[in-house]
Image (tube, rainbow, N blue to C red; front, side, top):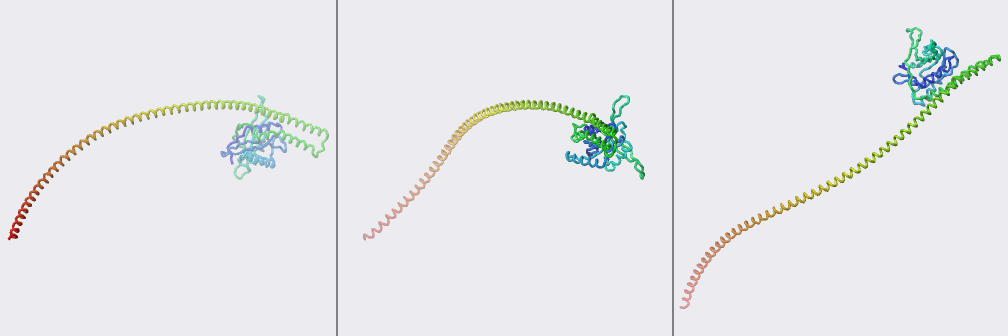
Length: 387
Ligand SMILES: [Zn+2]
């Protein structure tokens, strides 16, 4: 993957720079560990310092074993941090020379890029004193190699600068701290190996042996003086700073806790006041509602009583009127019926009387006639018996 730019975390930058400043006689080198994000930005967050197998002023080499060890270490870090960490590049120092990569550097970089297209190289130019101001200048560059040869021609590599940024980090990460504390040990080991080479299998005279031992002792003292001592001092300073920050943070914590307590107290008071107001309002409301209810009930009762009284009076007067009306109607009806009945009775009696008189007359006449006839018949018969 072709990368856009490189972001180096400030603690990783500090480790690289400390390593580069550890010696001004030879170049030092190490590997850069990190991850590439989806925007093709290379984030470097850890550094592995490498022990040099052969000290040379103008070149450095990484052995295949060192590269393999670094990959294993990156895998272990990836597991610990749960992030896709891997070896993303290498760095080396240029003491007393320009920051630009040498021809050998460009060739070495091209070889790494054949294995990983996104592999980058960092160069730290150190111990460059400005002649006029006498100030030490440190320069850093990030580069890759590109092949400029025509097709079918042998490769011709040139450097290509890669945009490079230093990202601030909150503190020293565990990986960077481990690398930093290993630096004096690496330097001592390199010195010991160089000294052992002079004693192995060579028959040197006593003066030369004494000289070599003196150089070795002086080198170890130099490492202690320029590396271990300042490193311990720097770490102690950082520890002191951290202690002071802890004190400040604890004071802030106490202050915040006090504020929280006060706020809680105010809240409690507010809740109490609100509860009191609510209770008071509720009581007032209940009292008002009860009063309204009582008033309404009384009004209703009064209204109902009034309505009832009015209705009763109305009903009574209506009943009285109805009764009077009914009585008059009844009297009128009875009188009318009586008159009618009297007339009918008179008419009936008259009719009956007439009829009876006629019947009586007819009966009397009949009886008289019959009696006369009877009387007549009896007289005749009797006269015959007398003969
Ligand atoms: Zn170089």
